[in-house]
Image (cartoon, rainbow, N blue to C red; front, side, top):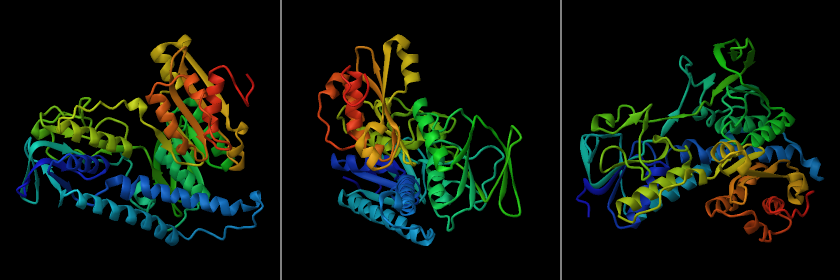
Length: 461
């Protein structure tokens, strides 16, 4: 039991990883203090996953209105009411926040509001009061929107995703610096709202961490949507103009637009919080941990965007649960990060789990890797949705499927099956023997596995 300032677990930061650790630890009978300077839920709930997906759904509605005639429905898009869009978005976030607060309260978790700092290997101090952990401290202070050296964010014409989420107008034109998940999602939203968008990405492809085939399919779809992009292009500078900004690239290209969205990733929030002073090993801002999320200091753990693992909310959930169970002595299984599903919610969506073809070849050798690609053009439900894309499988010769890669509208909803396929080390025959419901997009996964098993149905063998 807690005496008010002493708890089994003291958690610094109530984002996805922090509150997941708190909920699971409380469920296991541990007393928990959850320290948060802002709102429980962190970046994902308030400035990331949830509000951006609400914007993306509003964008989908706009496209449906604009293209209603394609389905025999007479409709037109009169315009985008950003006040209404934000009202809808904020209501979604508000409901989720209220539900989370209720859940935290029902588990008996002590929420400490204020800016905390690690002041010892067992203590977190908030406004002069130290909360002592009798079992473990968990660091979960999240991340911030990065920028480039010398590139100043002014919140007006040069913005981050935080600013983009509250923009009260639809820009006529925008440059998006960074073609990763954040960049392509905002580019997708703005294009649906009517913005002329140009993405600038230094690496050779958009969503560069995905399988190259997925990147190429997304690039093809973006061209059809009128989203411009320059890959293998390096940013040189930006200057303010009378109407917005002018973005310069190292090759001499100059792009004028209303604003510049800097979407070059997120950095760990670790400075000035007492970590290194307490002996916690930090490298380039990231807290270093082992497979159980233990830091270099016994009894101190770290989870979420603060550590060098995929910066995804559901990774934070998994790490938080792992830590709570490890502290409680349950001996949980370490996370296989290759088995974590990944989705970019642009239009079309890009979804994957497992490793890419290039990674598989590098790890196992070219002669040990097999791939099959099933074009969504052969999937009736995809045609009903008027989407294009593909399901690509990466498998080992005479071995399991080690990668599932998909591009298309709503394919993120198919990824749960892909996750099971990878994590249960399924062989092509295992999945090919399953009957998928018709007509659904999930059939595309079944068809791809039938082809991989050497018995294609609706594709040429």
